[in-house]
Structure formats: structure tokens, C-alpha cells
Image (cartoon, rainbow, N blue to C red):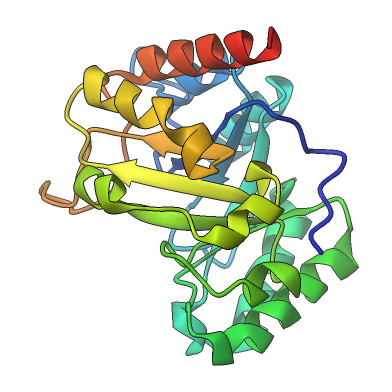
Length: 255
């Protein structure tokens, strides 16, 4: 079973793909500053991704400053590592993990491009054991972006699984698998893009408890932009999203 007692509570949190360069030297355009300010209202786990991974080197001075800023704000930070749906050599994945641990002062690892095939589970279980061997305190997050077999949770392969990474239309059709009722919502996350306005954003947040998500992030960015990357900006309603999650958490704590 997954063990998250030290992290587990009922509050909704943000799992933020922070795939934005930390240009701290330009205070007017330093978007990490908005993330840091938001941490006063909501718990944030930020995924950093220097270059589709740790870029095979220590972080440059800009990332060093950004990482320092995040930690001073109490934001947990996990390093992005691609697995290419198990076609990437395990030793290469472990090498990326080692670089993050050695140089980036991370709190955990985010394994992307995860296969949802049940027969691939051993690959991810090996990585989970490897990360935990470095420190049982590291948070391991995996991203199949879709519903997986319960074995992925019960074995387990991670502390937190992204069961939905898609656009708002896909979210409308999403129904949580029955097994999620056996586990805390703090083991499940959703990353939802192409959500055009704050009303739609709030509609999604209103359903998070029913959908069994403990972590979420919603953006108006989409895969149809020029760079086809919905995770390299903050949504125009970032502060509204933070405020509404804070409001939901506050209301929930009174029940």
C-alpha cells in the first residue's frame, strides 16, 4: 500500500508543471514569483524541467536562484524525468534521478511518459524502489495521464498518480475508477488544459472531491498554441484558481 501519512490531509493541492524558465533577473516577467506568492494560500508541488530532464549537468545560476526561491517559500519541488513508455533504458532514467538528487535539492521525482500497460509495471516499480532507496522522504509521482489498473497503486509504483492529463472535454467524460474509493484522494492528480475561462475552471474544481482528486492544476493554455505545450505558462486566471482552491479548503475545514 502507498504510505503518505506525513503528507496526507484533506486539502486540495496544486501539482504545477512549472516548465517556465526562472528569469529571476526580470522581476516583471518572473512568473515563478506568482507561484511563490500563491504558496501562502495553497500547498503547491512544483515540477521543474530544465530540458526534458536535468539536462545532464548541474543547474545554471538562473535555476539555482529559482530553486532557492521555491524552497524559501516552502514549495516542494520534484524533478521531471521522461521514461518514454518504458522504452528508455532504466539506467538512463536512474542517471537523471541521481543528477536531480545531487545537484537540484529536490523533494522528489516526477516520472513522465508512463505506460499504462499492466505488463510494464515492473519497470516503474523498480524506479520507485530506487527513489525510495535514496530517501523514503522523496515524493514519487508518475504520469500515465489516464486510468491505470489498480495494481499500479496497490503494488505500488508511486505515491501520487496522474490519472488525467488532458483537455476540459476529456475531463467532462472522466469518471473515477471504483478503486479510488479505497484510497485517499491525495494519491490522485489531474492536469487539465484548454479550459478557456475562470467559470469553467471553477466548475472543474467543484467536482474534484467527487472525482477523487487531491492534486489538480487547470490552465487555459493548450496543445493548439504555436509551441504545442500547455504547461509552459501560467493561466490568465492563476490567482483566481489559487483563491478558489483556498476558499474550497477553508469551507471544507469547517465541516
